[in-house]
Length: 411
Image (tube, helix red, strand yellow):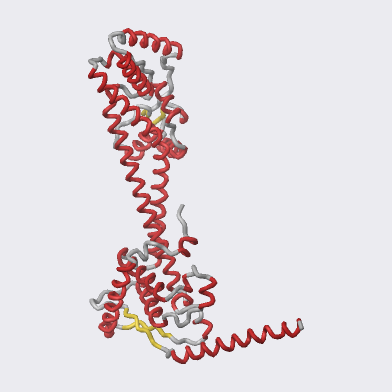
């Protein structure tokens, strides 16, 4: 019984194949061999590029064969594969790619590869700049918050007729300020690397006045921009000529603490003239002003520093938008390259079952200028069809299909 069952299965499968062949034969007889003419020149006399010809040829083949050679069984097994998609979807992809090629003015595959490489390089540089800015973002937001608190405190102190000089802020020396900034907002590894290379290049003229781990991100950026462009004011940390470190008279921690205690006593002596609620306002103002002074921001610098930080944040937002724009541009270029590969695959343009048929039913011929008028009429008909389709899906090219998303991703 088992032997008879095993013998019967191949017979059934063979019968299914024969039935499929009969249906295939009937479809083949209904389809007559055709010759497709693709004009190299448009009606206005413009010569089409090689990329345009590839996409136009693919569109003509897809329109002629439609879904005649589509493998339904394979389409159900691989629903995301572009080879097994309906002919209308394939035609839209080719048309959107053709339109994109015209908009960019790309004429060859080499130009497309070059543009992809250039866009990818620009994207890498922009992403690197944004990553460095993100490290500085937390520090900038902290300063903005402190400056806002100080601005509100100064307004309230002015209403109380309190003199800001009576806050008695203890200002640390430059070395202490640099140390505080290096802890709060240190230079990034990429900034240190770029700075090292630039200093090696300009070693005959410039020297750095501190160690690399004592640099903060702002000072490192100023030095890098100066060495790259040489059109800005020379930073104080950068020395010109032969420079040797000298011992500086810095205030010790004990002296700084004693001075801070003395200033606090002087500040409290002015507090007796105010109510407890007013004293709390002045105490908060002094605490905020002292924290800003530790970062090298004095009371007179509040407005200019706030303006500088806001400009930095606006520049950061602009860079983020540029990165998103470059990502979209790079994605579209990669999608164009991907569609170009599909346009040259017979299984995509003709259908996955076309090669199994074994006969050449289509012949593509490049027409001459004498046949431009006929081609122009077909081109106008294409435009009308696509305009109707574009009303339904105007972002057919920008929004990639799921199969492309799975095989092409941007981090």
